[in-house]
Image 1: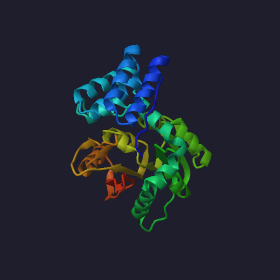
Image 2: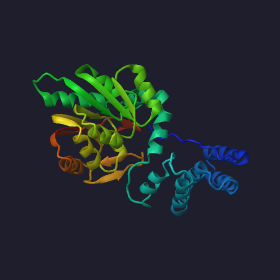
Image 3: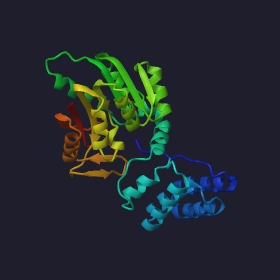
Length: 308
């Protein structure tokens, strides 16, 4: 499932029309003509973030890296919330260092996905992170009865992971940045509490309130974080003694962190181990597994379970 384009109007009818015409030309293969139309639109509306972003994409396809970088910089400047994700393209192009994904981009991305999210993920991409996480946690419990007093589903989305773990939780809390995704989750009636918040902000508030959980889940959430140590450290602060955290990440053959062309971060296995150690969490299992397919190929990933 690739990021979908969003269009924020310039407020200038003629500029907006030229933007739409440029899309038509690009769809027909006339990339240079499409770029020219966007340039015309930007002459009329210099702060037109959608046009700057689209121009960056076209220039990259036209092998104009410097022009693409300049356009993406303008897009990020024109929309401080960076709902198009221009900063991620700058990172991918090596024009700026890796950083946390803009909250505005993540929110806009998943608000757009929400209506068809479950079907697209499970039927289109063979998504199976909830199933794999459940198996890993069950294996960690071995012969013990698996039951959690309170569980937290980070980046709960529409509730796919929540549905898998609900039978084993006395109380289940879901947190997500996207209101549209949370509306889908609420409709399923899986959660005792649903909160719209950024993950680190939520964990900080829960730690301050001395709230503790017996299980924390993060199914396909941490690929939207460049650094894992801060979020794992924050999660450790709300875990009860000996409680578990189970999460999935996309991975790669190296040791560090890379931003893939899908605009999701991939974390090397050694990096994940180091982040867990930094957070004071004890690794129980780290298994290679693909949680989804893209372009008919499995996306390399890791299923991780650790204990406080």
